[in-house]
Amino acid sequence: MALDRRVELGEFLRSRRARLRPEELGLPAYGGNRRVPGLRREELAMLAGVSVDHYVRLEQGRTLHFSEAVLDAVARALRLDATERDHLYRLARPWSEADRRENAPEPQRVRPGLRRLLDLASGVPAYIVGRNTDVLAWNPLAAALITDFGALPPRRRNLARLVFLDEGTRDLYSDWYAKAADVTAFLRLDIARYPDDPETAVLVDELSAASPEFRELWSEHGVRDKTHGRYVYRHPVVGELDLGYETFRLPDDPDQALVAHTVEEGSGSETALRLLALWAKESLVSPRPRS
Image (cartoon, rainbow, N blue to C red):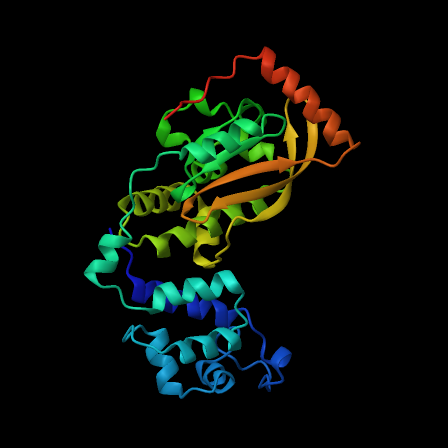
């Protein structure tokens, strides 16, 4: 099932309108008589400096031939961040057959350069994530921290499936909901980058059927790229670890990213990480595949 970009565009714009409050933008709130949350279409069009009909055609997806100036104005009025702005552009621009062929997803294989970077990160948990949040490669410390990826069938080496469908992974994160929201937002980006990828549709359908939390988060249309941040882990062997993470992408292969965790020097988490590394050497962590 291919992505219906017109439907996706309309839902995304409505979700961004709903999060804005008229009083925050100097607009009258008209008491409590609003039928929908957030800004009305007319208010958004006024803030963007475009006609109401022009904006309605954009939100309803009647055409995918809008100028850069219009899209920029709408993005500013909706207060979109850089990632959301890129997402809007992907959805609101027409795709030719040549575009579809050029952007057709290729089989995911770990590039040698990323593999070498992963091997160099032996002192910290690190893994390589590809499209649809598939975990493509990892080091032993990442397997010890998150899950024994090598013991899983390839289909289950997927962050979204693990976060929403695996009880052990759910218990691993101190703030599970924040992690779930991040993973959902990462996945939402992929659906616009590769609208014809059947694997994305299968994954979204599977998670929607199995997880009410995923359905709720998916309906919010959050989009986020994985850059940097931190999570608190509750590891069953070494206890709590407060770890940051940094993401590294190669400019000519943005579909694969190396995610490496960091730890504050001298902290209890650094001690716990050392203990985790010792445990990883002694435990039966499955070797990671080389291809």
